[in-house]
Length: 94
Image 1 (cartoon, helix red, strand yellow):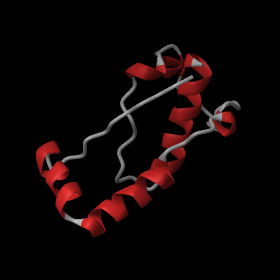
Image 2 (image 1 turned 180 degrees about the horizontal axis):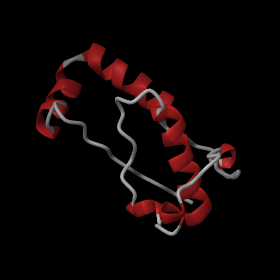
Image 3 (image 1 turned 90 degrees about the vertical axis):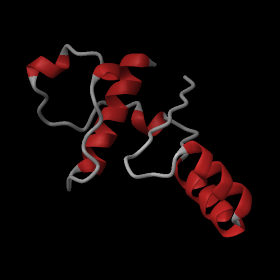
């Protein structure tokens, strides 16, 4: 399985501004490379197991994971919910 994704957050620099920041600011370049190295996943084996969700709404079980919006990043349980979304996506689509 090979996945590329891009998520653009509200109030983030637009693509042109981001390109200029990457070209003109060496500190920002290093920060961005470090950030990308920390978030890029090269091995999905850890996600191939059954989702950690203990209860899934019956209505959601029949919806393809690619059509479900990601969880709100501002909620306390974002990490757990996002991990479950990744597991569900990999188990269904891989």
